[in-house]
Length: 145
Length: 434
Image (cartoon, rainbow over all chains, first blue to last red; front, top):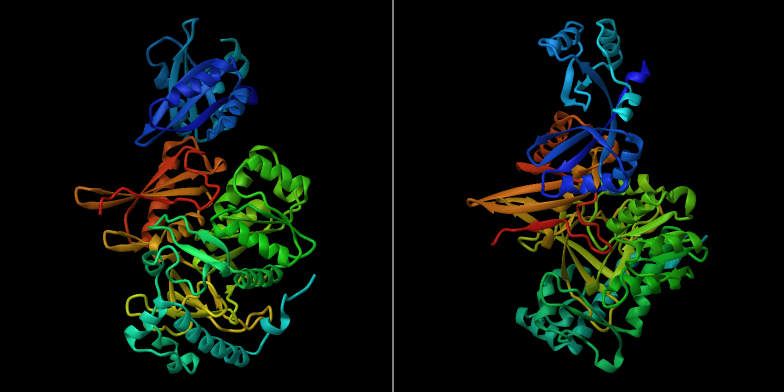
């Protein structure tokens, strides 16, 4: 079951020019690949969330560069390219009282779509989605995408 | 380890101490009247003659002196001795105006060292200690003052002065530093650098005592420092006009002992100049009883504090001033409300998610004062949910409002972006053009 936990890197950034460039150049130096990425902005600050191929290394690099950074467990849900797929997933979780804290999507070179979600009860969510026949990503999948 | 540097003086019964003060005050008044044209003019202006001062009660007949007097008579217009008797000058930085010059006779240096010698002994620092003096050496009194005080008690001085933090940490380990004298903000910065280098103060150094001052700090900050470093943090007090750093708390950390045979303290109402009863918060006024080059009569030092004459558990009979809660000069008036940076610090340090560094920024927007406090978040407290962070900002803002009675905008900034200081830290930016 733990195979399905995706380690997301989250970091606190002030909303000002150059912050993203700084992070991106650190990753370039260390050859870290970003698979999925989103910024939640709230006025003066933003939280940058990303799924990378080597989260432990990314965490170390950002921490040493002085960033406030954390690793958060999220799920990577494979979405079939058919209408109503998102509704199915949201329905499953909602019915079982699992709240989605936030979500963002990305599409791979193999033309698959994935949804990254942070939920209120991750173990329960994995069980529900597995039982519902929904395919979940593993860290291995993330590295080989 | 010895308990008192000068047991006979430090434990002298209060009535005997007062008799001693009375004699010294009488001598002082006639000394300044006869040696300083400045004081003679001052006394004549209010019609006081030295013979009018016959007991401590007559102290209030004497006029106050102010920092402004030192500036107006720059550089040496208030001195009571000619240059040939001086052995040293110190010059204040002049951050709040023209610099002030303080001169010392050989005896002034000795009295200064004695005062610190007693203070260091009272916190258990002596012959067995290595004292790292990380205050600036030079025109500032912090470095040389601590240096002489430490030598007085036979401690081994490491005169490293401020700066080069890596070197500070390296020598601290290699030479077995047991006590350090610096500003509280610099010690925090050092511990931050140490942590980044994987150094644990408690395990990797012999440091056990911090002698911290030269900027106002709070009880809450003391707790943070003691928790972060595992040392005992003691407050030191003094100012260049009185010689420099002079007094500390004793081991009980319950007020700073002011040596009554050297200094006479009063607490007054800053508006009326009237003396307050013991225990009331007011402005500290000090008369120097043993200085030769630049004695000060009822000097308005500009700090707010409370006087406590209760005998201390340590056995010393000299009065204590409780933690200095802020300088008159540091007070901000925002929308008509008095705000001390120390109040802000004390609120922030009670919130575990908030880091040790902060900055107060005051602007005037559309004729209205706006106060903003920038804080950093402790790494452990970081949540990647926007709501959690906004809730933290709100909680800090509400706590500040409860204490200050003022709406404050709280802004979280990235770790490491607020200025770290090696000397006196700057905690306020006032952008108002008043």
